[in-house]
Length: 496
Image (cartoon, rainbow, N blue to C red; front, side):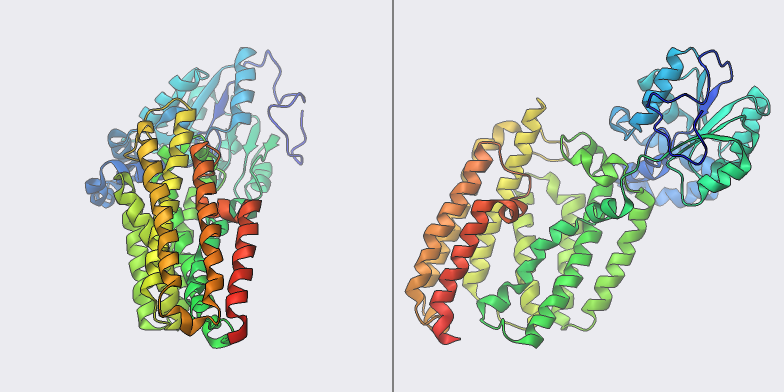
């Protein structure tokens, strides 16, 4: 028997909290225990995805009681039961207990119809107790029903939350799974804790992945106007660009979280996106929901001290991003154009923050290059879909057979970016900024080589799903970037 003071892996070879012949039933909670998420929140976001027009009914249902809310949501929302984030260690433990002949019951505050489907999928439970329209089976109500069914101390209970304390107080033994803050010690005071399992990744790591801190690298584009206008030595200008970077990063993180919350079902069915913290259940959905307004308020506070045009640009970016997340990304080609527009809008945001006029050349180059990026992203996603023998991308209006067309468009768009670069070198504006503009010609073969490399990797199925991150992590790309910086320094140095 494991010590209450020790974290134990339920799937290990250590002694179990019960013996093989133990007739006392094991009652298992669902939310946060058997699965690493909250089904009520999942159902609410499912309603938003599947029947957005009925979201206004939620306050009406809630006014009639939480049990009515859960029942109505379960009746309207279809969840993909097999892809829910099950706690694999708990499932393995329950399979062992089942093989020993121990009775196991699923007892949950989630709606009974959903619990029945989960029970049917796993095939582990001898019975299911869940919330009905008349009874919200949580806390004291769950305790009373278990005591009525099995008697006081006639069952063991596996749970994770503060609401489980009354049940642990009436149980013979308690098993604590990934406990909320302070729950472990409270459970030990309430009853006899035999096992504690905490198999969650470090919260700080899951947080960084949830807010997509690595994606903030894209927001370096706000410095593009500063660099192209040769104002990189102006500290006040750099300061405004840095503030724009911070505000845009916070805003982008809020949008990424919203996007992940809306895409929970499709991400879980995806071969790589299923590992995202929210999809995998490694970061609390409720905490993620709280992070959204916090990030938006932080971005607003920073934007307040920048020009009005920056504030308007940031609002436009937010609206476009949300519209993209909830609707536009599901429409073929339109999603690519909007995604490229959002990348280009980062450059515009940098210009409005620093009050630097953007040239036609910079905007045209950005739009063609980022369209190529967006198409490479879609192609890499389709390769991932094809690897699991699917014909269509979930949540996208693309088929695997579209790969050749998308690759042709993407490669052509990348070549157009090179052409814009070549025309810019021949323009009159160049001689105002560079002493030796002829040196910039070296950028054209460098860019052509890099675009070709991106698409060769994409066509081979070797491209990660984000070409921007590929550019940061790929060694050849870093060498190309270094060569480009040297080229610009040679062309610019005498004028500095």
